[in-house]
Length: 402
Image (cartoon, rainbow, N blue to C red; front, top):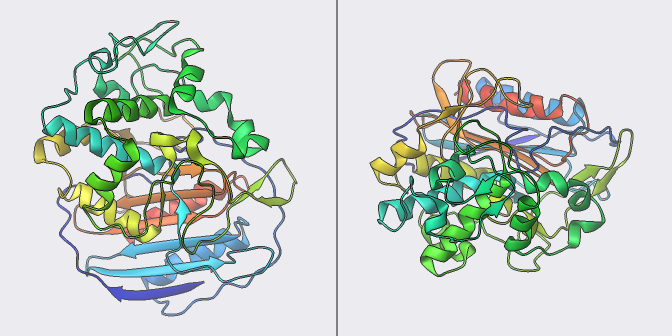
């Protein structure tokens, strides 16, 4: 594994916390594991001492013990310095080196981008958080126990709407032969609406990608423009995320340098290259491609007040409890409007989200005092039963060691 230093200019982060373990909160909304096979690979490293050594060693363990083909990390300390780390190999076939700050599919971290745009529209007076979605998408959200007149915009962003999760019905397809299928957003919504509501709006909490498909449709209806354009203009370009983008229609590859993404089809199965997929099934809930460094910049800018007015940022940070017994959750984990807060082992909170999509698992986190870290690994599902748990725990290590 390698670590790399570069001086960066950052604004101070003025609010608190993120989340260390989000396997259940991630794009696939499932804690799935499978055993794979990996050749032995040497990890490279330099500039490793003190807290940096803990991150380096953690990444090495993710490759040697948890059998991820590659692991990447980017950290920002209180000194404002960005450090990049890599371990493993970018390509199991060629043994190529892992690119520093390489692009990965960011999965459900997309939700935070989508929620940010919705809250910007709230600040502009074109969307009311506590208005029913029926006001903006009349007659669209209807089903068994489902009525858009009873579901508010806030409940969509906070996963308290009761809308069933459409990905529960298509995981086998998107990990398998259906990985190259293009889906229209309305198809995803129709799939969800074919099922019964999980609960009455506002009475419980359950993670559902459907909420963010509806949020994407809301953005398009209110602005009259594509959600990809709005995320790019209002978020990506605004804070200078140079390696983050929303893939175009039919785009199945990853544009810039990147480690390959892998998947084990079943227990004991070999890891198959699943880099090339059509991510349209994730859409506003999980389609973005980014890098660990860009994710640090985004969450730092967001929590630091660069993207939302204080009023909307306060709404985003108003959280509800996530059930402790959910897979990938921990004591004290709470969900806001597209963000997750989790207590750090060293005190205080971190804010972020997390994402799983075929081939990649990513967890970012930022703190009030300017620390930031993102961990990414290149297999989903995890090659070992503790793989995701260990990757997510390394985020806490990276933040608490700075």
